[in-house]
Amino acid sequence: MTASSSVGVLVPSRLRRGATRSGLKILIDGAFSVLLFVGTIVGVIALATLIWTIFDDGWARLVADPVAFMTSYVSRLPARAGIKAALAGSAYLMVLTALFCFPVGVGAAIYLEEFAPRNRVTNFVEANIANLAGVPSVVYGLLGLGIFARFLRMGPSLVAGALTLAVMSLPVIIVAARESIRAVPDGIRLGAFALGATRWQTVRRQVLPAAMPGTLTGTILALSRAIGETAPLLVIGLPIVIFSLPNDLRDPVSALPLLIFDWTSRPQAAFAAAAAAASIVLLALLLAMNAVAIFLRNRYTIRW
Image 1 (cartoon, rainbow, N blue to C red):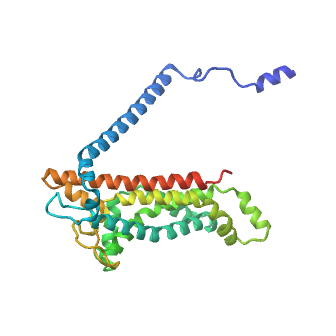
Image 2 (cartoon, rainbow, N blue to C red):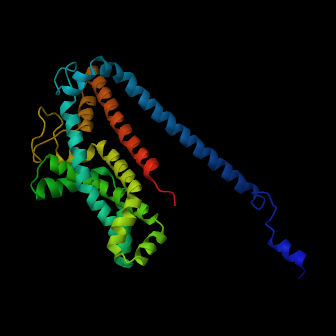
Image 3 (cartoon, one colour):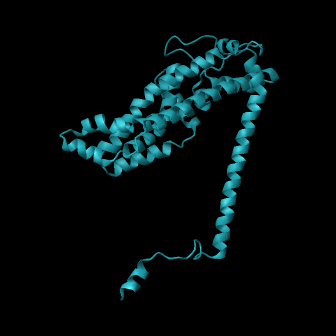
């Protein structure tokens, strides 16, 4: 074989993209692309319509007296109804949920990624964690009702609600933390080992700080999902209407999704407007949490 023929073998094919495909396959690919585009447009339009409806129904109620709306308790009169107890309850639930699920989730991710042996048990645990991230929230509500509310005799309390939401958020946090830890180059670990560091010192001082931006981002996104959940809190029996703030972890507590659910089920149009106004506040909280996640990701992510 001559040198020119050898070079010709190594030259990439000049056939245009898709030349080796049949006309039917090209038609199917094009139809599938159009279908995906239409599905995306339909989803965006539906979301925009929903947000517009919420703002159209609730903006006037919210801006009429936002301070009174957010600092008043619920009332049988829609003009006097406020979200103070539900807003404070959502804040308490999110703080406790973060305190419960963040250390456990990060610890589980560190163990599975850095210390756990590669065997069938570990593979079984990893597969189940990935599957638990897609379990419907009402299933976690049944779990919280059976274990926290009844078996541990916590009842419909603040701590029972926070533990239920923490269990629901754990799989997402573990998956996000593992991906962040896995993204740290092995050269960082090998360099620490070469300097005499133990495995735990390497993880604690090198790997974990480098993986923390992605871990925090995943945690905030998991909490953003938890703050808007209604089904788990309804299943464990948290009260919808409450006229006081919790003074203890065992006290009952309400939440914004529960109050919105209650107001939308009432026949008065004024309560529907109040529910839309409360939905605007909840959307603002979600946007703020997602903005924090984006800031942490862009500000502290290390480009390897």
